[in-house]
Image (cartoon, rainbow, N blue to C red; front, side, top):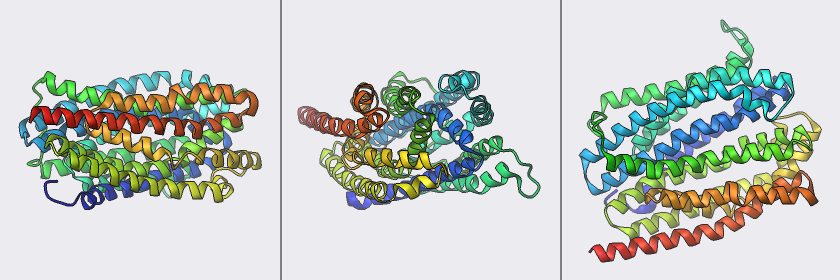
Amino acid sequence: MESQNIFKLLLKLGLPMVISMLFNSLYNIVDSLFIAQLGDDALNAISLIYPMQNLITAVAVGFGVGISSTISYYFGAKIQSEMNNSASLGLLYSLIHSIILTIICLVGAQAFLSLFTDNTNVLNLGHEYAVVAFAFTIPNVLGITFEKIFQGIGKMKLTMIALIAGCIFNIIFDPILIFGYGPFPEMGMTGAALATGLGQTLSLIIYVIYYIIAKKEIKLNNYKLNLTNTKKLYLVGIPATLNLALPSVLISALNGILKPFNEDYITILGIYYKLQTFIYLPANGFVQGMRPIVGYNYGAKRINKVNECFKYTFLLTLIIMLIGTILSLTIPNQILGLFSESENIINLGSTALRIISIGFIISAISITCCGGLEGLSKGLTSLIISLLRYIIIIIPLALILVIPFEANGVFIAFPITEFITAFISIILYFLTIKKINKDTIINN
């Protein structure tokens, strides 16, 4: 952090997370492929339950970003006691969050599914999956919390190992538990959810074992209530959580807009959000590598290093989004054919994927700006960008565009939104940097 070249450091911290995110994306896709073999109703069911799963991930990862940002700031400022206190309180608060989320999701799953479908089979399959998946909310959230704690001090290889181990477990046991191989009974949707939950638990176990062995790096034994640190955690954590939860709101809103046209469009949207993880999650890997570097150098008052890190992260993210664009434009039929044998879904989905992918490259700007702002502990500014991207622009635009373009209007809204948001994002980011530079000069 002190002396290494920024680009090399970004690769050192970012590449393990890119690899982790690729495995995570691969798991998401493989999971859908296995579930698709149970029929289109099963695939539709997990598409509908996805926003609730994303809500749990959003709270865990979002608050985890607050923990990671605060830890990396104190790491750069070399204040060990405050770093330990932030991590300890972060873990405690995350446990409380996970208990609340477990109750909400288990109680509300059936009612949520009923908002988007009247198909009894889809409702039953979705509820069957949700009950088991949401029962693992506590180990899932705590595992993500440990991940962010260790990322805050730059332990990216550890988080890569834990994430990959959980994903490999999922990939191996998905078909075993879904279809019943060897001594295991055929469990269908229950088996898919169980494989996911056990994989998440395995990741948590790896983090706990490592902490017990090497707890000298950071100690989770300072639970003294500290209002300053609590404020820091939530000032970044709440906006980051909302940033990540907004896609759930968006998907639910778009499902509602698409419902009058054809249920196949809802399935297509669900497939897209599985596919886009294979593009956006690896890009997010570099953003995750960026945050501790930005936070550390912000704490150390080295803004020139912050700017250098931003530039390199943007270029790497741009390359990933370019690859995603090329694949989406050239082989959409083959990609969608992995998820469904329905000719209608493949044909309609190919058009949708090509339209949406037009905005992939330009979205690299808003993705990098959000990550940089979170690393600078400017969570509210990052939230403004996400609100524009997921709510304020895209939903009204979709409602307007479905009038002339019908269901395709929803998909056309994606690239238009990305272009508008990118323009605003770059302005907000550099205004923030300008203010930080001014404050640094005044304080010096």
